[in-house]
Length: 73
Figure 1 (cartoon, rainbow, N blue to C red):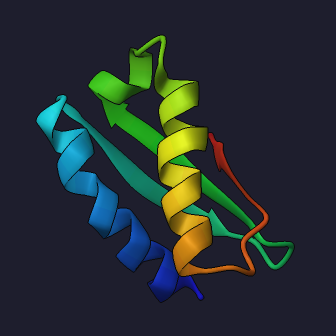
Figure 2: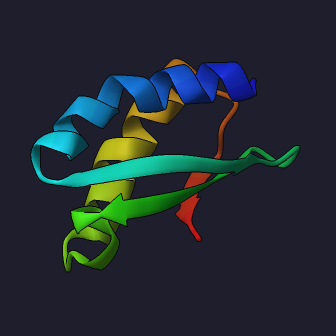
């Protein structure tokens, strides 16, 4: 499952890179919760929560339906 999540993050990474940010996979829990770390411009951006939920979480859930949520650590 971790490989599928990483592949989904790789799909959205170019969009984050264009804005000077990035995302790092920290953990995929057995409970279906993915933990990521937002880096670069995304780390301190006021819109980072929207990017996380409406962008990253959406893409990950489409690719890996068993994921329940994506959280920033």
